[in-house]
Image (cartoon, rainbow, N blue to C red):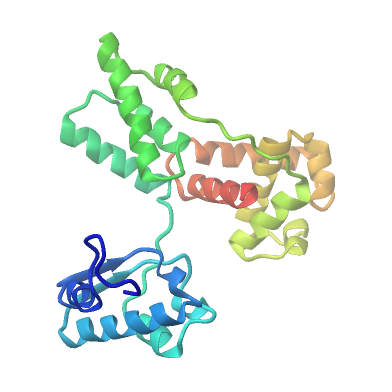
Length: 261
């Protein structure tokens, strides 16, 4: 727009026509126009032209419109007037469903326990999830052998970059559990045994044992002076639940992501 037409670039009018006469306008990372006065002015008129002609506009950003700073109010109000969708990384159940759908569509000889393993191993994004699945499928097809969970684990160990997890302490784990379930640490350590506290308490026991290898006796001391047998029971109860596709298993995955991010 500033330079006009040079070396095949658009003139201002040609540029505006290209976007203001579109049927659908898709813009990724719209937050980058924040603080750019001329760009905001140009986009405002483009937005209005499309809206008046009942065209579709889809914008993505790393935050909701109300959290934008230094964005003109007239743009903030227009962004907020549309449908706002919070898009998060797929949870475990969604990742399993995606891989099973792909398996069924291609009639791939991949059993469910292998799909579960791949879905549990890759939680970053769909591209890496599918890449891991294809790695397992390709190697299994090449060798002509049945793809077992053990074989898939070997393949994934070679193909997935393992992240170095930072060490965590007991207080960090308890804080993450409390934030996730919206409870207080004092209640977790207390004596009340209502359901809204028992589940977070057991999850805290399990995660402390799993992530820090702290002895049962020390976990009991940390969680309000409980007997070590109580801690063992809580850890075992959660272990039984995470072995199946339950809500608790997904809770564990989500809380671990909170802890390590």
